[in-house]
Image (tube, rainbow, N blue to C red):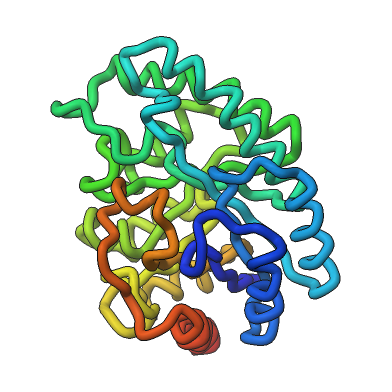
Length: 284
């Protein structure tokens, strides 16, 4: 059964239990099956335990995502020290995910977010990324965590922008816990036929982000149409369709994603209307 989730990044990129535990109650009241937390900035395992226990009481699932800061670690960097720094950071992402009760951790883990070399991606960079991330993904497998590798649009990354490239990366990694996270906003920019590419990627897809073409309310633009949802309905997909949107409450992502304005009248309204749109599309 397809489930519907809500990414908490619309409210904050650095959730803490005391300030944000009510978001779980709100998402449950709206009708979401799960919530998604950013573990890139988290370090407190006790906080994770509190979120997990609260979610369990509400019968909500938790999924997780993260990004790599290229100033700290970067799988495609020519600097070996930055490549080597990736494993302990990614291991923390996995450990935090396990503590939260997440079985799916997603993100553009093939490179540092917003990093560009100034040239086209090279075969050497591709190999750097595979060699760096294989032991990271292997550790995730040992912990029972699936990985969704996310193709991003050309303004946020350069190694993997399309579903086709993402599939090749997953095949080259060769671990059964590693698949794709696809995002309707990124695909709207990069793919000539989004539905066709999602259908091609379906055997590899572990997680899905539903994002409008302007990152606003799903259903108000042209990136979240019925044909997209039909791919997952007709193809037997049983994972999450999780709304991902951003606002100015995510300062750690402002530079890399060029966030400077709001994308909806209110964060709560985006969640409520987006949820209603997804449920309508799934019921059609």
